[in-house]
Length: 258
Image (tube, rainbow, N blue to C red; front, side, top):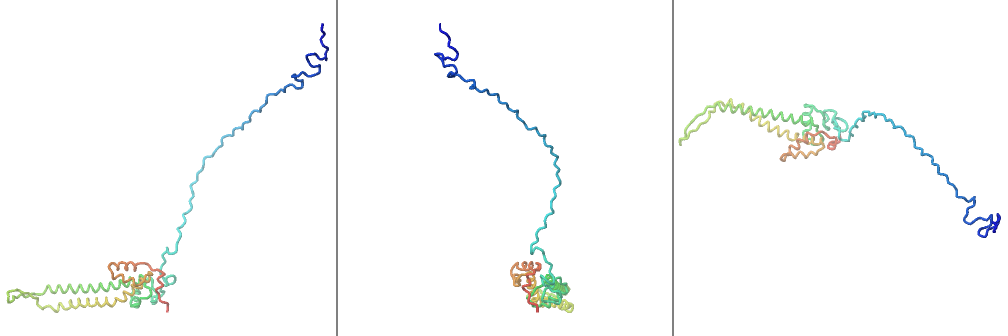
């Protein structure tokens, strides 16, 4: 009868006691035990209270006062007068420079003193007062001519007529020469006015041209522009030019002071 092997003796089919059995794990080689991971609960940020917005306060808009438009040189109308920049006459007796703001009497005096002077300048008041003076003279002479013509026509209607028959039987009539004494004053008045009208027109031709020439100079226009008056509708252009304001640049037409 076979006896079991003593402890520690190797069996024929297995390793000796104390040797590790192949495939068997040693006590220290057991599989590690893993604990379940512990996750901290997520921390959520505390909800902030909704911001409180105050009702917007709207103030009335404040607008700055509009800026003044820029003033450019030449846009402001200068008042003509003595001294700079127009260099007008300070004394009415000074005929070398234009007299701005001349009265009617001063303008007429300067009109005759500058009878044939085409140099220099003439202010608007000088020119238009002179034109008014000439127009009044012509109007007065025309009135006298009209009176003479009316008296003469009235006299002719009052004359008697004599009828006579010619040798061929034709009737003729003629006025009596009576009443010629009454007609003479009217005829003299009419023809005298006609003669004076022609003489004054000739006498004032040169000074009228001269002062118009100087008025154009005062507006800084060349004097020969007056000859536009000799062409159709050119007189309208000259009329407009004489109405324009004075310009300091017209001083270029002045003669040097003596």
